[in-house]
Amino acid sequence: MPTLHYLFYQCQNPTCGIRFPAQVGSLHIECCPRCKAPLEHAASLAIEQEADVHTNTPDGHIIEALLDNIRSAWNVGSMFRTADGAGIQCLYLCGITPTPVHPQVGRTALGAESSIAWQYESNAVNLAKYLISTGRRLWVLEDTPESVNLFDLTFDADSRSILLTVGNEVCGVDPGLVEISERVISIPMAGQKRSYNVAVAFGIAVSYLRYCQSFSQGSTKRLPST
Image 1: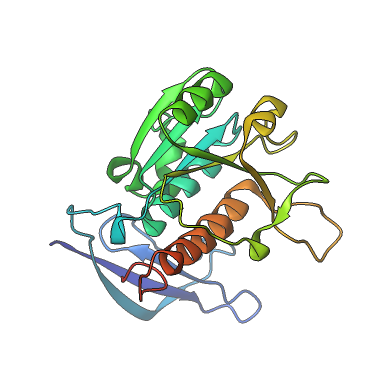
Image 2: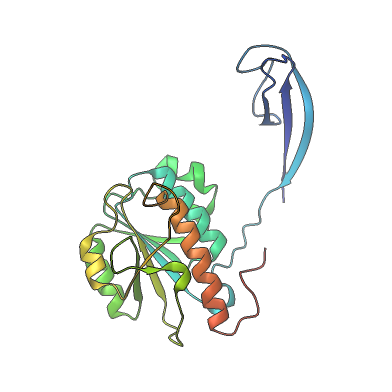
């Protein structure tokens, strides 16, 4: 596999001192990008690129996700990256959610948009009803009076695929999806805000669900090995 080489530069101006990386050969850097002072080489780094071989259903436990009306392409890209790391089977992109065709998705997905199966549908409620009819369990990540604390969840012996749904950054999950869901789950908050950024919340939820699901089905692994 090819290796990428990076140099870390540091500004010699003591009132600036910014330190930053740049890929060797990609940029011609002559001075500090902030104060224009001379730079020095502070460190180097070699990163072996990831192999193309990918297995996205570790241990045979399946979680899929439905991203409904996500506004930000960067959030979508981040969720693709999280899906890859957590072993998500498929992402369903609905409504106004940007697909990997959007160039900004790839800026945060960093290649995960090519390794995770995805499908676009315009109407999330219609899609969810169909997926429920094929055996999926619709779980919605949303803060409602009836929601269950994510960390209080218990898993039964039901091995059907979980379809985790997250919604719009401002107005949340479509009420039509909440109405037909099997479970509504929420993440407890300690600060003044009522919710995390949707991509952050998605990462917390899928990682914890994978952890719980693996143990409930007898796996000795907490999460897929890296």
